[in-house]
Image 1 (cartoon, helix red, strand yellow):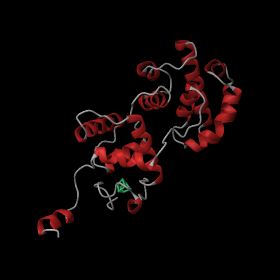
Image 2 (cartoon, helix red, strand yellow):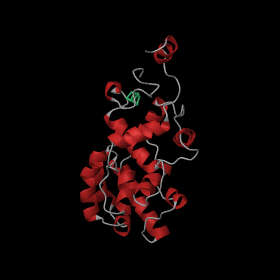
Image 3 (cartoon, rainbow, N blue to C red):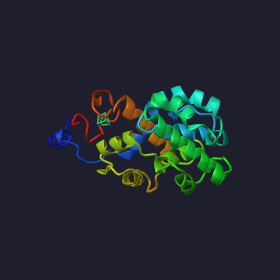
Length: 230
Ligand code: SF4
């Protein structure tokens, strides 16, 4: 029989951050087999596809990359590609000329600085044209197996709704999420950050969407400070 004290506690609105260990464990249970949804066969293809995915969806990127990589299968080939021809291939994604310039510039950087190979090095990747911290984390996490949080729009939104951060700055969000994992765990962020990020992205796409989060169907509703309040 609940006491009046326990009833009052249960009725109080939850304002604290969601327990990160609980969130990580529940997301792992519902988003089994989470992996990048960008089709790729090697590090070069994943890097190019990730750069192309800016301001569009993975599904749309997957519709153009088969033709793109059939015509230009590696950095050396893409570095020498005709910009107008590449633009035609990536045009369905929007901003065709910009995207074509971006990936040709990236390929040229790979050829000039890394003999056409994709380096497993954060600073070297970020030094390439069109590659930022998030893209480098996606690549190094998904292809090279590092534990790295790639903060995109979904991860940022989920982190704010779960009370883990108040920031919109991706670098600050990353630091706040890692600090929350450490605080709610054993003092170190034991979670695989790459997998956690992929699961947060899936949750953001399928359940905790930007405009209409489905809190009633969410496995985090009992620990989330934003449940029913967005
Ligand atoms: S769907 Fe609702 S309960 Fe689930 S994480 Fe988003 S805001 Fe929280």
